[in-house]
Image 1: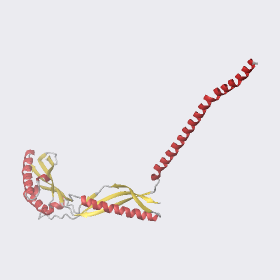
Image 2 (image 1 turned 90 degrees about the vertical axis):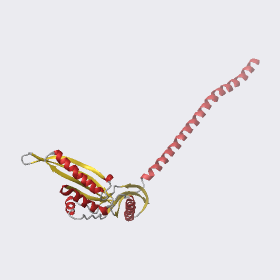
Image 3 (image 1 turned 180 degrees about the horizontal axis):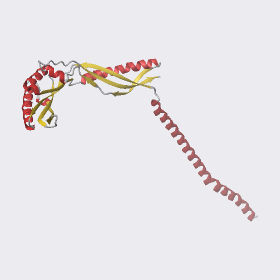
Image 4 (image 1 turned 90 degrees about the horizontal axis):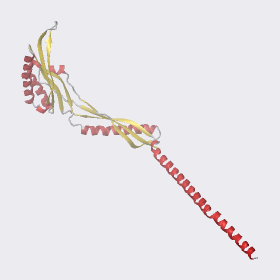
Length: 269
């Protein structure tokens, strides 16, 4: 009786212990693994949604409708600067003789220009050459020397008198290769031309947008194109030489400054 009782009491205890050992540790591990997998999947889904939303947000502006137009603006100003190339040509039987004669003539030319309102810093030697003169038999019969100056003056009213005095000082050996005019400071004219170019670009864009059944929005991008200026009057060499027979008439005329801008506008939906 005692042995059976002990045996009967021990069996449930063993079964309970066995069940506790079987369920406890492994059941907890599976529960923890399931939660970890769920959280990992949840984090991946959230990240994918965020990435998709960010991608859509970045791609939205590129899909917006735009229009590209080019606007031009032109203004007119009065030149205040005159530039010309003037020089001396001399001939002699020897190279040294031609050069010496040229040096004397160039000295008289520079003195005349300086005495008639030309500033020394605006005189620049642009060419000095000595070359041989030959006859039909290719025999050397002499030498020619020529020297040229680039001259700039900001006093156009006195430029004619300066050219006339230079011709008187040098004589028939003088050379004049042309006269050009420019505006020394174009900043204000360029600003006005750019403003007109932008305004014209907007007008053109608005007309196109209206035809397409929409309206112009804000500016997306502006590209300032090259600007160019043209002088009103340019004297060629032949005309200038004829003009030297009397007091040289100098007319600066007018100069145009042109600007082009390329503008990209957004279009309203």
